[in-house]
Image 1: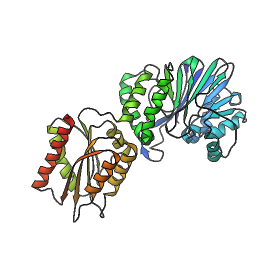
Image 2 (image 1 turned 180 degrees about the vertical axis):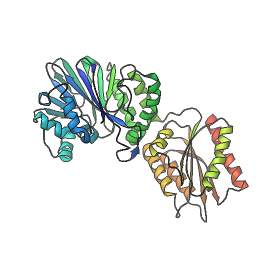
Image 3 (image 1 turned 90 degrees about the vertical axis):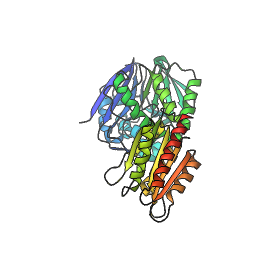
Image 4 (image 1 turned 135 degrees about the horizontal axis):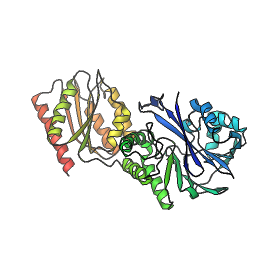
Length: 404
């Protein structure tokens, strides 16, 4: 039985959270054994009742039943859809059925066709303008377009009287926090790693828009005391922290002297070479994080990308395979370019049996994406003495680069 939480966030604003501990691959792509939550919000005053988002479709019946613990669904006047991805809009058809289609949907103009195409329904719909305000009795809602966080129709809602910003996917994170709010300092440290992983996998492709939209919110001079996202913790104690962290992650700000090593090795040749380079880095006081893909172990790609965000530098190792880059490393590098294209120094280590191709191909790809390839060590077969020296020299170059 999944766990459900209902609580009053502030005054008339409630959170309805379901803990999804069943999901293993978010978006059928990212491995998240830590799970995720879906947070919807309800503003229930004596004047108007406004629902903000819903839950994933598999929890639709549960969502409507949970809602009935606070209000009858047919009493809801407005449903604000901040983002149409089905983990937030999936319960909409069941909800509208229980609501008897009386509520008006408030959303970005693009959302109308999305609702019709996703769910085959045509509810009452009011398109919102960027910066538009709506009075709902004693509360005023202000809507802000925040495009590409992480779809084009994404918006946020600021409830002026409650000093609360409802942000949907933005400022959320993976995991199932033991609390609803940011009150457990020990867990917050752990949670920020889950949130970083969430940012780079879910929004990383649009990371420039994270900075643009944070700046847009700041320019509005809103008095934000609560940040209420659709996944993870609600920020009541220190909402500025998650804003600062999202900016840091979007910019790829590094942790001092942290090098992420990512490699594949079919028969141990690349692994042996990587170990020589890593030993040299460690001797020079470098913090090394290793992700490997071999015949006994496969790292999580989500964790790989998350580690790249705050890395000072990266080491990549792979073989030439069928006159190309080893397939899974080719995939990893493609996702690096799409999600985590930061200007960070890179060393490439590549082995081959009869012709070296991978090293040059990876170097060209990364340099074109904005990375700075500072050395390529390519070798045939076993690691011989000259290759050993080249690997140590590459490590020393990296150490010197990190001192600069």
